[in-house]
Image (cartoon, rainbow, N blue to C red; front, side, top):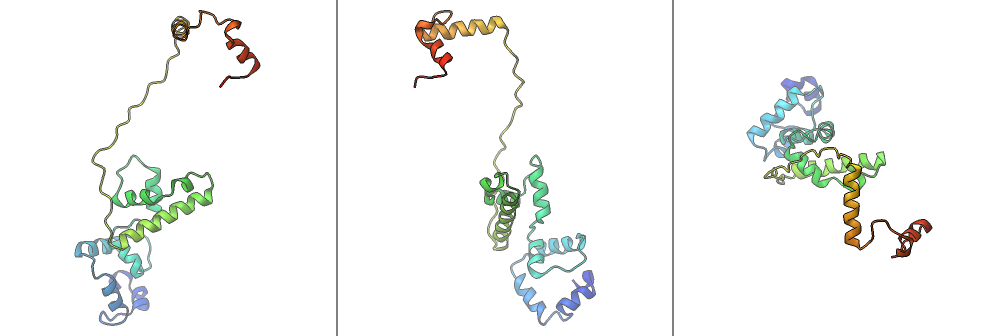
Amino acid sequence: MAEIYGHRWTSAYGDDPNKGAALTWAKGLEHIAPAQLAHGLTTAITSADGWPPTLPEFRSMCLGIPSIAVVRYAMGHPGETISPFMRQFWAYLNGAEYNSGDEYRCERAVKEAYELASEHVMQGKALPPAAAAALGHTKREKPVRASDETARHHLDEIRKQLGIGEEPDESDGLCHAQKDGEVDA
């Protein structure tokens, strides 16, 4: 890390790998696999942030927890592949708060779901597997207005099934209820 961050690292954590912060970092990264450590280092190297991460930040890099900015981007692009982290995020998102129409409540719901999903991963809990299959969606064609002749035919069929003559008359009570604005329950 000192080679990546130079003086910023050594002034914060020291340069002796056998003392102080190095021992704490070793304990904090104890159950992280070598491939995950490599992923964390790659993320640190390619990050636009020139400051060294804290232990929890580096651990989250190793575990592949995306930034909240990446999560917000993924929320706006639902057609793309959903990562295991995003599946966990969606499981924690409070839909009522998110869809409330109140910007503050919506933002709070996103932040809380992100924090819960991040803690879920940091605690070593399993992420939900991918769905066995995706539901298909076919785009419905725009409805076409029926011709007057077709509409009359269907209305005649409905009247016939209801036992109403071709044209409703005032004796059946339908016209009175419609005119008065009353509906019998």
